[in-house]
Length: 138
Image (cartoon, rainbow, N blue to C red; front, side, top):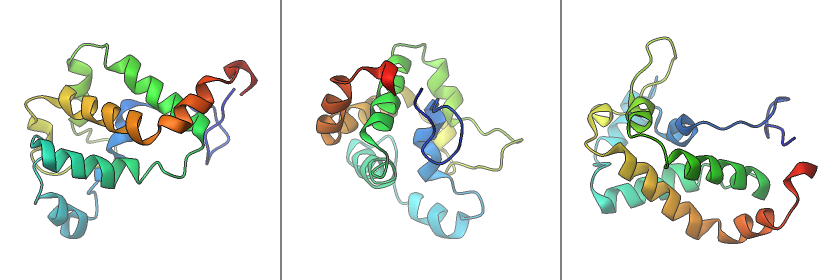
């Protein structure tokens, strides 16, 4: 079983893991201000945001972790749109906060579809390498 890269628990990523780089909780005056200059629904802004805050954030993961994360996203993209809306909703019990207005995104699925496309390009070699392995040995 593939273990979490930083904790002694099985690695079971969730959709919200992709949004961690956008967490402005206690950083409203730095990261929050920076992110307010971008529109996550604008394709060129979204491309920049995905590369800077997702691709770069996960660059240190092993090829196996990237494979599991990528496949979880692919499986989730087959789901109902409500799961994407929920990913952007604020949970008052968790100390995290996405940029103002992101919870009102018109097409949250498109945001995750673009993540999937970008990661399929950037992680191509890692995904191929992991795909050739027997995952039962992880």
